[in-house]
Image 1 (cartoon, one colour):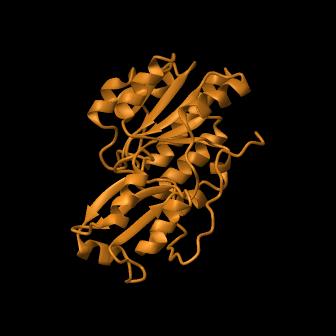
Image 2: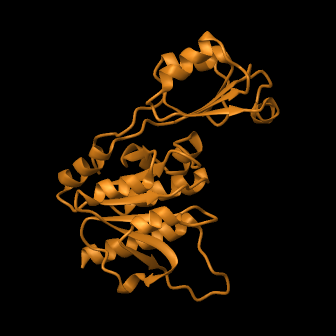
Length: 262
């Protein structure tokens, strides 16, 4: 296992109210977090709230990957743990994100063809953490997640990953379809997990490959699926018709491991 850790643990910030280690409430606390360079997944600002400090905060976050949502006061009241959010709530990343180049560097260091797991709008943080854990154990060189409508690297995800976040690069991108196109230009090909796909034992999953896993309810989106080279399915014999997203990712990842070993 490599010595390098791909993420720095989050800095301790004073006067911060947190829930599960990843929620910050209150204008001053959030402003302090932004100034300290803390990685924010999402920033919720109450609708109609606008002044110099808010505008400065938003301006500073441009280009950082933070999703900024203008949210109704009633919704923010429901989100708040302290009841004193002052119209500003931030959801922080428990770990810093990596870059695409970190994935290729790790594959190069190991002398292996790149193997990535791409997650199309996985929303459950427990699923995300479990997939990152599986990715590490299956020898994947990184996990790519979407910026919108998806879980980020929260404290819940870190706990569910059982330490794998320290060794597995996780990259957050704005557009999964565009990212797949860019990776294809670098010699990768992509298998999309789908119930109507070719049974995994009949698919060639060797070489430089990306495994695409979809949303827990709707699966892989049409646009992302169209960018993949083929679809792959898991044979199922029971009365229900689907597996949990993290379980499906584990089964397919280990079919890739099996084929690589052979």
